Image (cartoon, rainbow, N blue to C red; front, top):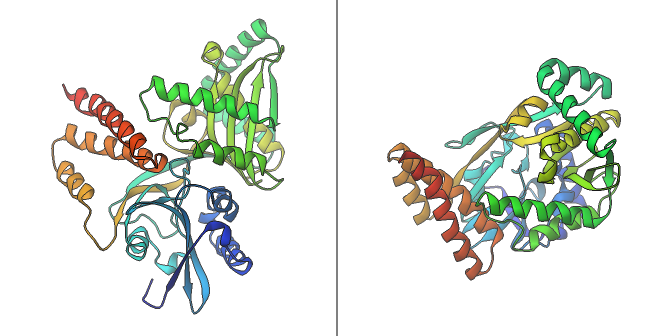
Length: 377
């Protein structure tokens, strides 16, 4: 990016038709940007998020790059954080719009946890592996690939399913739940999970749930939130999952299940049924996000990289200076700094009222200390 590049800051819902066409053209030319989080429809759905904005980079009056973001003071986060698993600048790699360039132009500190970049890893960022499954070729081809890779895992899953059928009858799978009450059920179970694990409740702030409900209510055949569910033969809801869907990629987003049915593996059973349905309908990929939870490695495989890190603007940031000091310390202190920074990213994204922020910060510091410093004791 050079000095001839201009920048406009607008609301996401003020995007002009010609710029929307330029956005689509950039994504079509860069396969690494073909993901529903980078679709302009996601930015439009998130236009009501507190602090929502869209940076449009122009050269000669023509739009060459787009970055949906939200501001929290000097902090710049991807739009929809902490819910937005993947993010980045929608631009050709040759434009040089890396996180450092974006932070300079926006005049703040940019924090990203799943940066997608056709230009490769930004300097100083942590590399994280995306896990996904190629579902092209239909249901039978998918089943063959899964069984070959994880035969023992799926043998056990078949045993668990037989146990479910003996006790609760044939499981009832619904691919396309439109009832908002099912999404509320997912959110309620996720909030219980956050409380049990001492993680910040990302749905307490309200706007995050509104974003999901908006994506569900506004879903068309080509984009939006897809909710799938699993029930007993008697109709009791036992598992459900909310996913971001653009008709090519199904990004598994919020999976949950009733703990009373955990021994039957209902969460994994639901995911497998979703994958099979996506394969049957001609999807290209089911994306599990970054991270290596046990069930993911049985159902998915490495499918690319995303990057986590911080890029600073022109002015120094005291929080970053403190982080650098801790990063040079012993291993427990480094673990504490990384854990605390990730927790604070979530709190900064969610909480826009001072009282809620301070309550979350105190809880996060205590949880990070127990996890990181306590582990060394």
